[in-house]
Image (tube, rainbow, N blue to C red; front, side, top):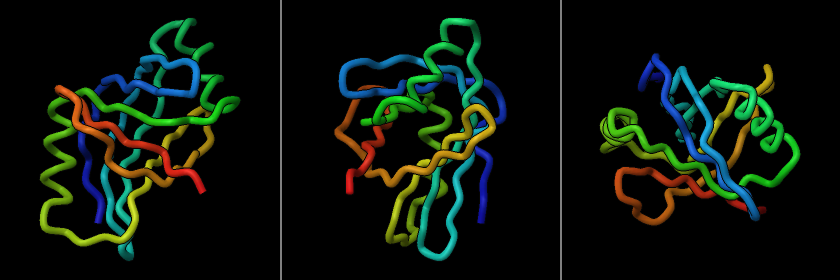
Amino acid sequence: MKRSLRKGQSSVYLQYENTGESMGAKLFEASLNDGVASISFTLAPVDSNQRSDEDHLHELDLVSVTIEDDLIITEISTFFKAKEFTELQLHIVSKKKLLKFAVSPGGAQLNGLVLNVSRS
């Protein structure tokens, strides 16, 4: 079961241990398969600075991702409401690579959904 959350452009905030940056993103989706819930999007840098920042995702350890778009947050909540799942994953397509992260919902933030990357 898959649902489009937003087709147009939005932005996400990627947090690393010592730095963080906002990045353009698109094609937000939610899916549920065999008890695994996933939220996915494709990075879409809007300028040369963001294209340079995108390299951090491939070089540094991601700590969390914040989705700040109210429509996307509402759609995520609606999609997963009353559904049972055992695992939550974040899938990010960046530079034609699919990166998968086990995540858990983070602390409350005004107008933001924080997804903390789980460490094994």
